[in-house]
Length: 406
Image (tube, rainbow, N blue to C red; front, side, top):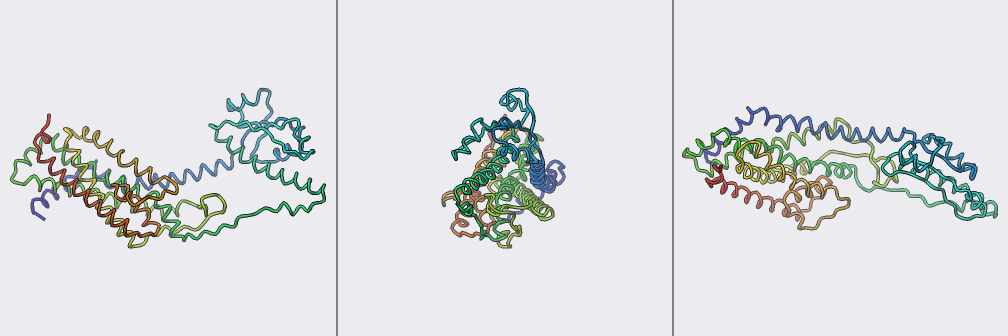
């Protein structure tokens, strides 16, 4: 590597370390903020769910005399608080004075005795989360009530009640503990890597380009005998180095916090609520870590060159931030979309889309799947994109109209 490139690289890194704002974005934010936000979010969600389970919901019950047995079953539920109403139930639910209203029709018992189907009315407000809880509780009550009605009908006709025996599901999860842990990590780690590949080097990229223009130091650097190409590569390596450190710190601190916190609590064995919790192993294989780092390097190189190219168009630090903001969203939105689609099975060409391909590959690797076709296509495409981005940055830095535009 030419001596001039190394000199510029060291100089920009030294300036970065001296800048408190950049240090906060590069080290402190990924080290403390991301683990705190992630672990805190899941702990908060767990707390909210537990609190909701303990909450009682207020309902109005009309037509108790139409089915005393069903009314008594509803009243016996601890989580349901029966409220007497002197006004229209629908209006009370709408104004959220109560969470729901249950109306037992006058002909309810008559239909039951005639062995006909019967129904009750449930008035809820979908924007009230407690209304959904009423629907869930009521469905359990109705199921139990139906079983009692059917048993009574079969008894009257001298039919063995064992005929009511239902088919039950005994799930067997063939996913290993590592696969389950990798599935969870596959939602978070890819997004963090892509995000910090941009954010990590953002302030350094702005400072070595738009920042130098704002401080009027870029002109003196360009007047030296150092080639423009060497200047660009030196600055580019500084941005890439900072971004790489940020990614390693962000993922490392998140993973350490995850292991310290003991994961995200119990997980459903099938994702459908059929069974209880299942053991989860969040360990990552050494080869997976190496592959993640290798792909991350090329991802960082591509983003660093792009951010550097965008920043040099700006006349000030603030203007550069305004330019990079929309670009950041253009990258993150597709990644979040692809990462959140349930059951998404990408075709081969998805692994040629920058950033998206890395996200998909990360998810596969974390779940223990190593598809060499996907690996080669992802690595190859990122190398091509990185090369194009670096050459573009060199070309932009060679244009006086861009460097010194008014």
